[in-house]
Length: 177
Length: 158
Image (cartoon, rainbow over all chains, first blue to last red; front, side):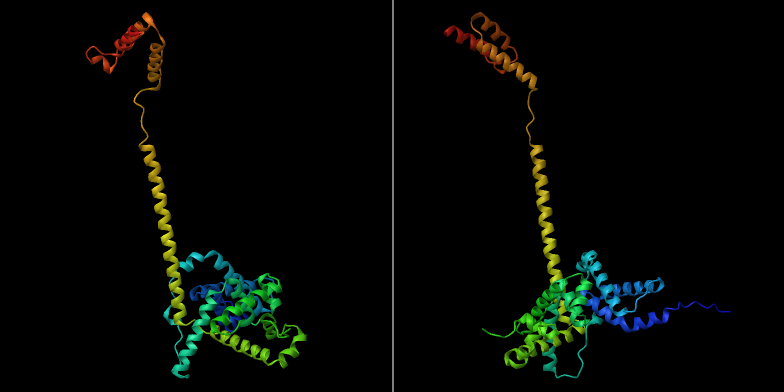
């Protein structure tokens, strides 16, 4: 006779959140940490905390914002504690590299690839704070006030970091600042 | 004076956070409208690029930068190690070549005291002290020499 494993009542919601936000959390962590493997590890930590949160008495409804905030803090901690690990680590694995699809013409693809490369290089050169602000504002779609609250900064400071980040990234594209 | 908005204001307008009084200007001024359009286009391109995985060259560039950083750190560490070893050897050599006194300090002091007594003594007294001094000297082996005799001779000359 087989044994039944008890499925916790929050499991279905956890699964739904995992499916909905896993890729976003990994991308966010990768942008903040600049390392794919570390991003995966941090994302796992984040979802472990989510499971712990479900088991606790306290629960929230704003899971997307909660996940972003926890990811942000986890990346902060990782960057502070594991700087030597990032120096030691080698370049990313080959499977991460995108394959060029057949849609655009070779010339257009080359131009797009070149621009993308310049943008990424400029992004990698951004200071961590500017990077965080830009990611929250542009890729996560947070408002200036929400980003300021999550990063414990003033709105003015967020605007300043954002302006500098935009100027540098546009500089990489050859646009006016 | 130009009424065109600054870059900072333009970015705020893009986010919809700017000064509302500037909005009519952005619609009427061709230059500012063009700037806002370019800003929108650039930011969309940046967002699109960052939503995809980093390209190979950016990864290589980062790996190269890391390798350069490691090389610089290793070089610095080697220089510091070399300087540390050099300093240690220098200190060791100073201790090693420090001359060891030939005589005990008490012995030297007694000898100097005797010399001083002889030089300050006169006449018979001086001869007596000179005789005492003539005992363990290198000059004593020399024929007709020795400090005592030399000192006596000096006294006679006087």
